[in-house]
Image (cartoon, rainbow, N blue to C red):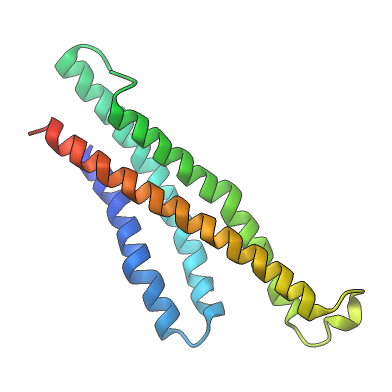
Length: 162
């Protein structure tokens, strides 16, 4: 249980406080940093979905062994279910929309784009950039929520096993 949880939470901490800030600092453009961050975030989400499922299964098996019931609605299980839901929303709802907007922004920034459109590229870019920033804020909130909930589950699990 703890290994699955620590892999997930440790990945979030590494991604948020080490990898992403470093990439945006050392790479020559935000575009390149985004090219690394996007697939890395997908991998982090997949790790979370697998780790959370392993945690739930192991925790229920532990409860069966110790209490002769799985305790489906234990606080830690509810928090893990919330973490899984937040991760799924981020991966399957927010991230794809951000990728699409990012791709559109790349196309609009290419020379000669305005000649092929009815609208002005700068206003379209500003609109899409605003939508991207809004989704990015939601993505960060979801990841932050997963991190906070995960830390609570770490404490609850450590107490339970001590």
